[in-house]
Amino acid sequence: MRKGHSDIIGALILTAAAVTLAAFILGWGAALASLSQMGYSEVLIKEGLRVGEAPVIVDVAFDTDLAEEGWSGRGLILYIANSGSVVSVVDRVYVNGEAAEALPSSVVVQPKQVAKMLVRYDWEARQTYLVRIVTSSGVFYEGYFVARGGP
Image (cartoon, rainbow, N blue to C red; front, side, top):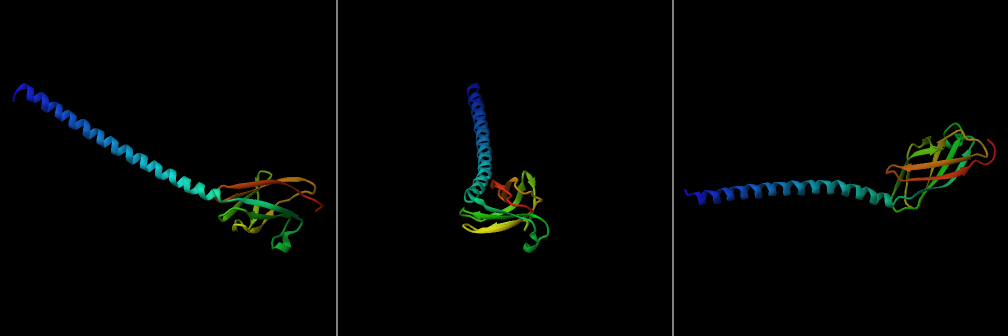
């Protein structure tokens, strides 16, 4: 083989190696981008569900005895409305920033409906309380409510 032919064959081999490496990197990058987009779409789906949730505390009754509700002790009776378009599952309640025990532990609130939730809390008359409800998807509502009357 002459010297000119070996230079051409060497250049062809290097070009083939470079094209193969470029194709491999392109395929790897496309797969990586595809996987990251799949993860992002799951977040978008969950965010889409959250957009339709709209739990609201429409009233809080400060009760001195929850026995007639089937639970002993003092506490709050929350009336929770869902003005959104999807079902909300309220599963956490906080009073003044502290987690509070609720009965039932989670409440399913249908769209355009109102549900009742009991919260065990030792409240004092004429005090203001910050009540926060949180759904299973992380949507929350909070409001200030004043305990009227005496226990």
